[in-house]
Image 1 (tube, helix red, strand yellow):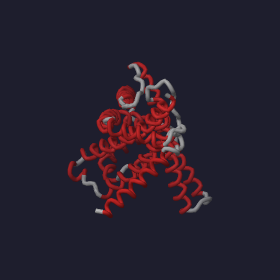
Image 2 (tube, rainbow, N blue to C red; image 1 turned 90 degrees about the horizontal axis):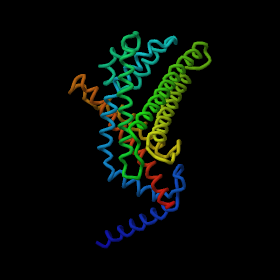
Image 3 (cartoon, helix red, strand yellow; image 1 turned 45 degrees about the horizontal axis):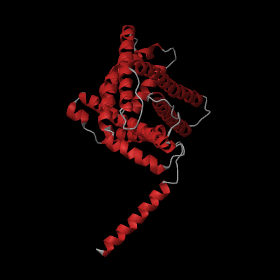
Image 4 (cartoon, one colour; image 1 turned 180 degrees about the vertical axis):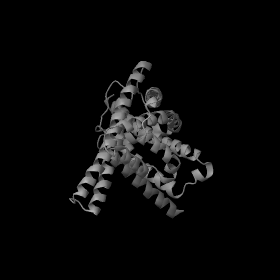
Amino acid sequence: MVAGKFYYNKLKKIGEKVVERAEKISLPFFDGVPLYDVALFFWRSIVDGAITTRASAIAFSFFIAFFPFVIFIFTLIPYIPIDNFQEELFLIIKQVVPESTFIPIEETIKGILLEQHGSWLSIGFFMALIFSTNGLASMMSAFDATIHSIHRRTWLSQRLTALNLLLILSVLLTVAIALMTGGQELIKYLDRIEIIRDKFLVHILTIGKWIVTISLFFFAYSFLYYMAPAKKTKWRFISAGGTLATILSLITLAGFTYYINNFSQYNALYGSIGTLLIILFLMYLMSLILLVGFELNASIYQAHTSQDD
């Protein structure tokens, strides 16, 4: 009994010191707001903000938009006049997508990437435009549903912003794909003329892919958090929420891929529909991360506003 009380008092003192320290320090991109104040608002937004319900709504909307958008983008790729671009992109997709998920869709992706389908372009464009803007509009509605005092957009303003974001994200994705495929071609050329060695080639490829992947996630989150929320005062473009979301996304994708490749039996249990379940579950996890990053930015904004008041 005495020992238990001793450890309780010791832990209480440690907790008080941690709180006292957190009240005095501010992390990068926190706008000078103490860590403790941000943590209080952030905890409240996670616990009371129905974050799982909002993430489910975003994931469903993104899932509906995913296939029209992918079909439209992939239909454009065979028309790109770059040697071996389609083949290199196919290899990149094969490396990124978990093996158990890729096998059922391999022939479909190969047919879309390597063969031209002119009749799909117009239909795919309008379907991608409608469903993708719907998905982004759903995301903005989920942002506006935060417990913090964030302003609301009109329907027209929301749709125009969704269209702008869709264009920006498409450009980011195109640039990332071009850098990855172009980088591989450059390294292969340097290898052919014996400028670089095999081990060096592998290291350069790995580092280059990570840099492109991290940059893609970071700038995508930065644009979403900067443009999507309805607010009168612009938030930071480079934000704490964008940094946190990028880190969590990379950890989640790495862990998810490892799990699917080594432990998952989705395809054995559900057949080809297992691939759809995997995609939907991954979208749910990424939607949760998207909201966590947003709520961190909203908490910083609210804590900063409370200080000013």
